[in-house]
Amino acid sequence: MSTSKNALPPVVDAATWNKELAALRVREKAATRELDAIAAQRRRLPMVKMPDYVLEGENGPVRLAEIFGDHPQLIVYSHMWREDAEWQCAGCTGFTSQFTRLAGLEKFDARFVIVTQGPIDQALAYKRKVGNTMTWYSTADSTFGADVGAPANGGFAVNVFLRDGDTVYRTWHTDGRGTEQLSHLFGLVDLLPYGRQEEWQDSPEGWPQSPTYSRWATSREIAEAYGEADR
Image (spheres, rainbow, N blue to C red):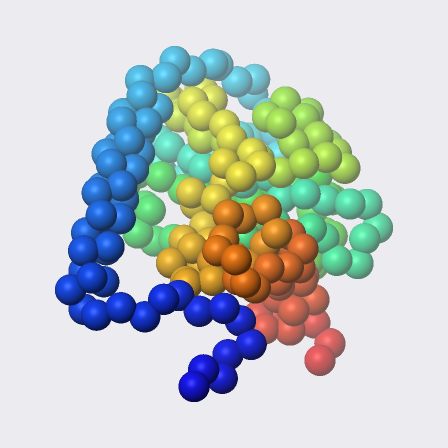
């Protein structure tokens, strides 16, 4: 007898299960090939030259070209920032908390950093508070954030840049659910029988569903797990 309060998938024999899995695998492999084709198109995108922006880092002003370090490629996540807020965007806080080991990216000649519209001292304090391990920069005194789709008190974005000498070019941008391809959390959750359990998802009758975002970790919870927040 089932003890679950939720509906359950039907129980079948191993042969039937393998047949259903094989049918799903056809679609999964087709999606993989489509993602490969999208990546190939992305590699063929043109690019646009960027101004010589100056951002603020932990050690003072730094030119955008210098943020690359020794690498020709750069991924920038624009973290939402609300002035005077105790806790910044839970989605951004949770998303960036996933990136704790980035050395492997350097093998592909790239770096991944965070920029935010908050003043650098406040941004670094928040970084410590939530236990973030990435490198942060402030665009509070620059138009960079607004120019790449993340204005003050506005949204979040991912941008990719290529450097040729001291000249920087913008090669790709996304926001909204486009950032999910970089998240390992949703990749894992989407493997689960009940998925994200959010109301918008197409799930069988009786599957547990909650309001969108209601299961996401809050910024305070991220801080309690990883950072210096009061416990």
